Image (cartoon, rainbow, N blue to C red; front, side, top):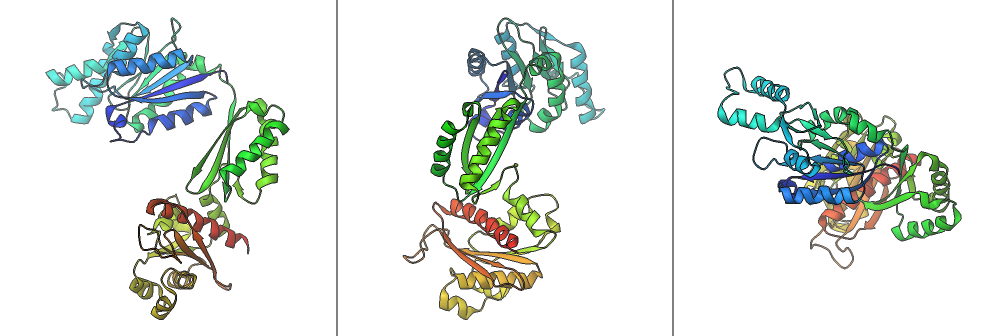
Length: 424
């Protein structure tokens, strides 16, 4: 991979966890799409020595491009531009045209009665209008302009962008179109990324197959492979140069041969995408107890969800199961709320209540406490009801605390529904 980059996310509020970083992953994804390999994403506070240390570290790693985010405002803790200028050995110069541009933005925002020449206002504007000598300013979409500092003296090109994600993303096209960044990107490879997703596949099983691939597939080392477990699914992300696409194709063929039953996606698609495809215009309803509405939330967390989600019921108590879903109280008394019998009745109740084409239910012991020897914490019963077919029930046991059990249960429910719909 010919071009490497580093990203520095600045801001004490990010470092301390008060604000979650959105910029690092977003910038990394954009750079990958441009063929740039991101070697490091670091986070540091609003302190000149710490930011300087990050810039020095990335330069020593031989990256071709550094992107910083944050620290461009008018306040005393906004030190990124000055720090980058000092690191690059460049003098900070006032850009008069940029100063008036920022002043015009503030004037429009605050109204004609606001005095942009008042002491504090003009001081803040002028601070943001300083640019390192030889650098190119990126026009702001808020009030903070970005800066591109060209490579010189053995140092990489540095792109300085604001912290608010909306502003950064709007300014990104101008940043990558600047001559210094465009020159770096012109040297980048045609870099590809492929994602394989599996359910019910253990990491140890995948690792064993990858060891086989290492000896069976020529040039296997040209692939950069990472794996992670996410919401009960195993993702394998592979990056490679376009010329090495045949190597990845050979790996994919081997993986499908060994784990075809567990692999459900080889083209970036999610189980949510597969559910929509399996529904084929039909409606789904949910009846949830232990998942507390998480299935319905996940189903509706995408554009156009109203086109296939009929509705849902969250029924923690036995009375709610009876009154909202029509589950007979005698059934609950006989088998217990956490049972396949009650799960089936809940799914059938949701099917009838919403007039849907399929319904899924969950009832279980998410924890903490409440479990028994026969039904320990993590025991979940599912029901999948489809008109004209026997209701399918499944019992699973999931490890972990309440949050993990709920997450794993939600994913399992989607996979079960897709399985039953595709069995038509």
